[in-house]
Amino acid sequence: SQQGEEDPQALSIQEGENATMNCSYKTSINNLQWYRQNSGRGLVHLILIRSNEREKHSGRLRVTLDTSKKSSSLLITASRAADTASYFCATSVRDTGRRALTFGSGTRLQVQP
Amino acid sequence: DGGITQSPKYLFRKEGQNVTLSCEQNLNHDAMYWYRQDPGQGLRLIYYSQIVNDFQKGDIAEGYSVSREKKESFPLTVTSAQKNPTAFYLCASSEGEKLFFGSGTQLSVL
Image 1 (tube, each protein chain N blue to C red):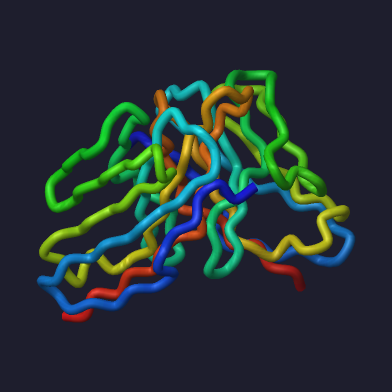
Image 2 (image 1 turned 90 degrees about the horizontal axis):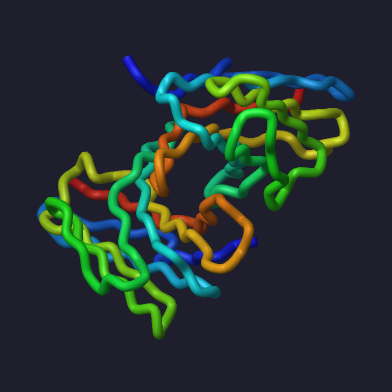
């Protein structure tokens, strides 16, 4: 089951610009997380936002959550070439026996130096 | 140096052969997971284990098997019943709600 869908699928920006990625999901969630994956590597946790939170910040990252629209956005400010990676949202679904995250399809971000 | 170790990094499977992917963690986490990633795609859950000697099927368990005899180890066997095994396999463990991933195994069919 594909709970989350990211938009856009791919994004190319210049260094110093902001990058915004969106995630939509289908069912009620306990929390939503964002992960980063460099090519051919494992994923690294970036930030977690709970269903009763609307916005969260961590360094250059800003995440918003709108549970009424079942959507989240990840904003990376002042991007750097090292931010080039794929970014995935992952949801923890409420009211199921499933104790594992469901991942979206990802956004591939290319930051041009 | 704490973390999750997956081996091998690259693995080739012949037709009709079973292969086993190793995943070891020294983070003392109870829960462990296997995900499959196809090129340009997201992750799909194969199996997960919340505690030793217990595991649950994920969304795409057919053609795969696992065991969880030790807390630190969660090997994945790709059986001959899995007709399209070529993919990048990721193992993870969790502390609370956050996942920690290994560096993955690329499995290809000869």
